[in-house]
Image (cartoon, rainbow, N blue to C red; front, top):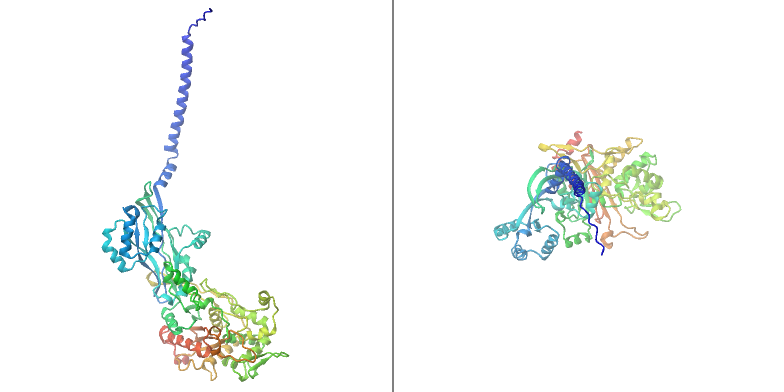
Length: 631
């Protein structure tokens, strides 16, 4: 058996090994402590502010505050659109032990509908339990009183107040003011594209139509913010700082409310529109489209039933006939064409035709007839306007040609947007060779030109365009953009006026041509054969104008028009354009009444009532026949 060798321990070597290992371990510990201390220094000293900001970000929350929407006034300071307090019934689920029982009791007390309960349950999902959820909005005073008397029975249920848009004059101003309504996905997309999402962070409503939409940026205001301290659950503990919002601007319109109401009353149940403006500025004094509707229906969300009734109504109340209605201008544009004829030397004041009631092109069998079957006899340019002789204007249109007519009438603004401060505007149609080729892929025939001479054929215009064109005649070519907004309401009732907007003027070779045309329009109202003479008998002011009767379908060569045998929607439109006082125009009026018949017997009387009210109530009755004679 071999014996194992015995080793003698080297205590000195072991001690050195232990010392080396201990030193290495110590160095490692010191290194780790250095790293820890270094990190502590960075956290507590070097990066203190950064981490404090992050900590506050978890503790402090910035909450946006919606601004109060600007108010809208008429030119006399009457409030047209205001912000009224609205009361809503709100529930905080966290504070209620038995939510189902509470809702049952509230249903019995407040007569809640199934739709309201369904909306509450839908809105509650995904909502933090300590945040309020609306159960019913727009509480009546009686409902507020009823709940307040029983509120002790419902912990966690309260009545909250907020401001909401309200239109005190209902359907009188709908197509001017428009309305505000809830922001939808489409609106939100536009807000994001415009980079305005921060400014609408706390806003629930925005302008949808009319002035409310066009001047949304002015009316909305600037969002405010408050810094609040919250706990780990997101509950607000206290408010640290508040930056108040900037309210929207209060704007003043050119509209005169009393005149607007008079126009509405004058139209009665007739479908149509009346536009009243100040020819000296282009300011819209009244603009009513009938029928209308109550904009308050849309503010809190219109019901499907009500919206369907408006949308499917054959009377089309949702359309603003003043700016979107496209009508053949008919004889109301005869003064414009007379001016063109004089300016191009196509006619002169001494040029006459013998009107037999019929017009025929050379070598063409088709006959265009005058409204007066047996004609007007010898007619010059002045009489042609006074008696509204169609045959004279068939002849004039033939001589001018569509190219000259289209170019000149486009300079008057036909076939283009007027620039009025409403998005709801149509441009109408001023026909031309190029238009017909693009629209129908057909050439322009000379027969197409003849009815253009009396404002028919493919020619359509909006009432605002007509009004703007009449103002251009009144101002001898100076053109104003129609403006609904007058300016901003300042402190102490002062108004910061908007600058007037002008367009390129319509120029003529001889200034006297304006007076020839305007004098003929005076004869329409005051002449022995004027088509509007009966409508303006015994008035206390001197006015001028032009009647028009727009045909909506063609009558056969051997047929005669009989309104009683024609469907109502195909009957003639009654039209009138006019202004007063003649020597110093202060007001111009455009009237279009759908399917009413002749302009002289149906539209002119409406214009007369509007002018009567203007001079009796708006202008203070200062403009009389005597004052005009004194001028």
